[in-house]
Length: 398
Image (tube, rainbow, N blue to C red; front, side):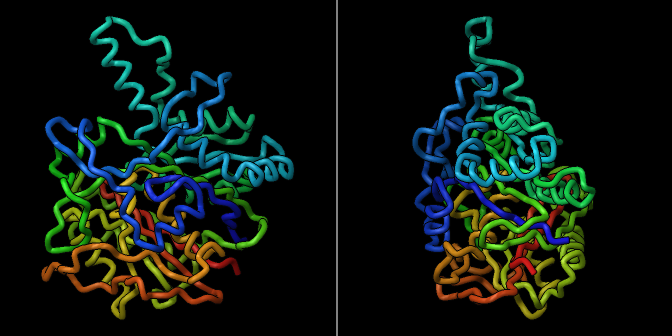
């Protein structure tokens, strides 16, 4: 049976709703990446922050108060009518929640610990539950009074891609009739300092697949889908295939030949009953680190010897960590949706200086166009520490 992605709520450095995000995404707008001091001592770094005041957590849910949950709430409010329709149709006990995150409320935990060090007590508004990895799913389930399965997957940068896979499995098994799935992650000192300690953070806007690439930027985002076996209102967009692998090559470095990445992409193609030449666009993981880009380009060149239009969107959003898989799946969704009136694709933004050590790829330019008629098939890659690899295929529903 087909797994429909019936609605999307999204917030990131590109905008605060689908229309804003789509407009800036397809225009190649990097203005959301802004240099900020204060995250890492003695460094000013580009970060993909969501600007402006966020919607507050309801007063009667103060234990759930965190920036992470505020971002998630913004995404959920965008599709509240679709969520309510699913609950009314299937019942509170038949709607699940599966999310990916890597930070949860760790920003609030850091602030609480700082207060404790200076004042010998935690601030009154601090609660340990804010930083638990399950916090986003618990919040969403409590806010909507859902009693179906509700949990969080935390596999670093594949977290929310795996959340979509897991949501599909709940539908396949008949455990749920609809699942709210996606991911959320927020900027915090812990992650920025951690990646900086690994010498993986660039002091300039990231430059994926360039000979001059020198590391990632960090961003924040929330992306939330309503997934079900029933088609909703147009557009009819589906998760057609997914594949995962764990090559366990190294705790942080990717397997250099791209073996695990290739396995995940091949699994996704097999489950979607597609061949590589049927893929119309590939959203690369494309972090702009030396090792990831080298590995991924090898895997892509092996799978697509004739080339495939591809790009990394991280220069526009930063790497949103646990939210990246769902966010970039959302970019594929937007590419297929009616908001993309000109049928453009997310452009690849870099300095145009290829690394001669890497296979040449088919970069999306502003002139590139996606076919205006179905069927169209878009792939999105996510790779994580520990050799964790996920590939998703999103396309027009059959």
